[in-house]
Amino acid sequence: METRGGPADLDFSQIENLKSFHGADLACGSGTLISALYSAILAKYVKDSIGTEDTNISRLHKLLVQDTLMGIDALSN
Picture 1: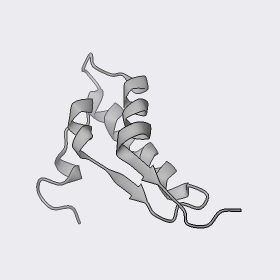
Picture 2: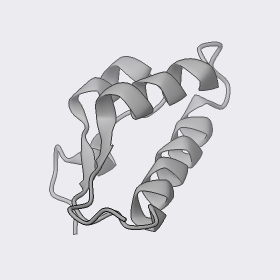
Picture 3: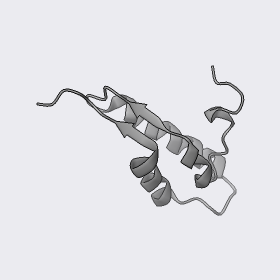
Picture 4: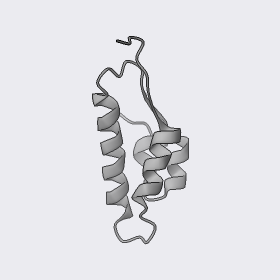
């Protein structure tokens, strides 16, 4: 359950608001969890951006990949 002021209260239509949001999968393996998190953020961004003129998927992708989401795994092949 999210608390007030948490990610559920963020206005995802504004990419700047996502700069304070971070997600990590510390045992990412195949990357299923981090991919699902990416997809969920993208879907919420698109939903919250309906009717605005500031929809920029490329900018969102760059923010998510470079600054917001992190996946690591201790095991390597």
